[in-house]
Image (tube, rainbow, N blue to C red; front, side):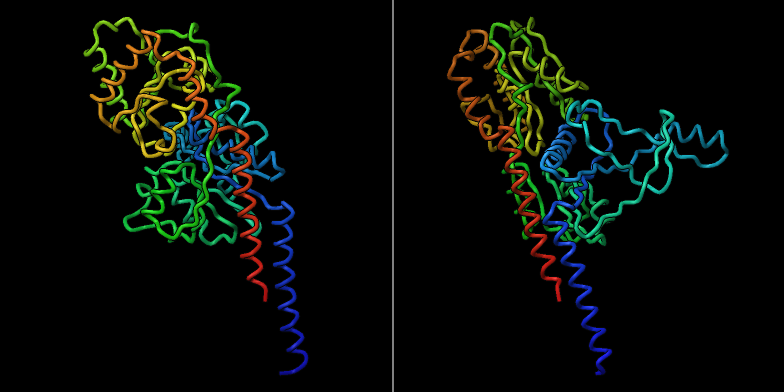
Length: 396
């Protein structure tokens, strides 16, 4: 081998190592960009709230954060425009999550696509293909394997954020796992999800943190300001809605003497309006059978609203005999009976004892905002260190 060839090979090696060192420096110095994929929903969603909460935590710690989304086609507007133009015209629904309030402030939204997109409100936005660098990080919610597949060849650090056990396997093909997309890193939001993932996808690297309850909004309401109202938020499927109303109708059938007690469905509300009505109620009926965590019972406890509910996998870490009336998951008759029992105890003043709120506060202690911020930032720092170690191994 000639001296010229040897120098060329050494130069290639030096250039390669210089590139790797440059990437490592960007990761170490917080020059990475953090992308979070978000479904473009314009109605209240706990899952999207968590994504934006994570974005705010990253932003407040000095990270560059971009929320990315694929706009949804407005079928009717597209049909009408195509008919008029005599050619295919795609019209999209805008993504404007104003219901998030302060959570959405200062977070950059990037529309994914190729070129300009027309929206049904008249806006025209430039949508761009997703381009990530080696030093960047991409967080993907658990129910979007299409995004996992599309990004399989992108050399960034990809992490799945698992908020619901229910959509993990339901969104995948038979015998498919996240490892098939080259992803092994997962952030879980509950004990139940972590246990589930370890059972169905052994070998994942899971880090877990606890979400928080905003105690500035969800705060104790004096018992004298409570109304004889049962609040509820029906599930996400038609079947879940039917079951919820079945529980309530069964409760009234069991207890005609309680016909004067009103029910209030919490749906399509801003966080502030939701909190106001939750806090004004005396009883919260919780009927989410598939929650990966479920914040409604905790928010109710924080406002002194007593909870009667089912016990989905995600809530097992905080649902105890001393902080609510808990029925077997999906058992309509048992839940209706417990609702009757809880209402009777509330009417006789047995639920407004100081010890009850004390139990609520002990449950809520794990879900303090400062603990969430600290825990999530620690996880991100761990990923940074792991990424630096991965990149260091690429040096020649």
